[in-house]
Length: 380
Image (cartoon, rainbow, N blue to C red; front, side, top):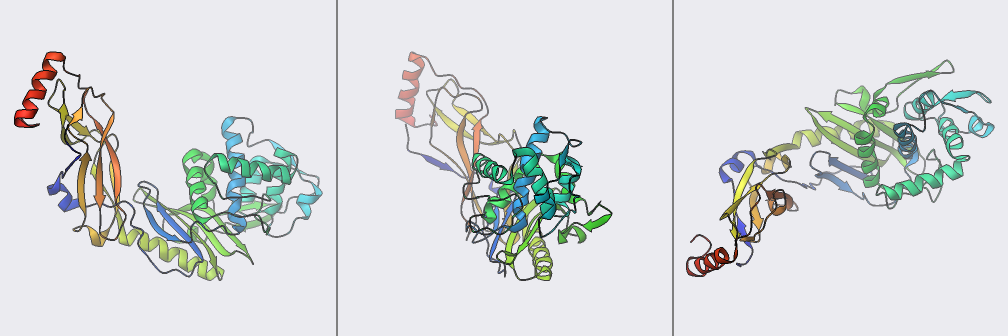
């Protein structure tokens, strides 16, 4: 067999459309921690101290909601189920839903108290009702976080109340945000609701992006003295979703202005480009000792990359595989990659699969093919 071979493909198309995957382009932000990702491609648009453990304040309520959403989805809990309000929940400080002592509140109302009003009291009612105590619920939160890939998040309470050991990272908040959106689309809609009235007290959603014309559809603010002002935000424009997490801003005004600025930057400076649709043949690869001389290399998904608009004419695209590919080859087997490079950005790759099954030649055919290869090479 020959050495690995790199094939350049579809240059005429790429000269017009371009692509990149992980721009990691720098933009200054006063936030102490910041992370932004394009959901469709996984492209990281902004990364500032994104893996530093930090106090997440009320952004950790995303995990509280996740725990409840899972039970609702499994059917072990219903929105109309009611939980009792303890004195501890009633007396809790900070932002409140204003639950009434010794009353019962439905899961649906408690979730709106958590999501829209950022109610610490609502969190504690949920924690005590579902796990017996807030401490037990917090341990469940941490354990479940590990199971879904949040390796650095530690929860000491259900509310985000200051505690030295209660930490998350901006990257993990973004990952959790994406899971909430993907796994619970029906319940996620609550995050877009702008107000909720409970106990005759109407409170507005604290997410500042919901009140601006930027395409925001939800997630959560946070603030304590230790954390500063933070926000986990999801924005959709023309079908393209980005998730932004910032923390450590100096004021509500700074959070309102900076998050809007970063979101507008993401949509102004970057675009998503579809290079190939699912099922498209990108290239053909030579086959070694196969009943067919070549196998089509096919996209098994839409191949989409996030591209800095200014870099459209500077990218390089290649199809890479070790060839010729040895038969037998199963249809759908990953046998190659399409690789995209843009100056100043990390290369990105996506798999290509065999578009057809190729059987191995019998003994006589293998001898003849080997002889032809020795005499004339793979094209003989």
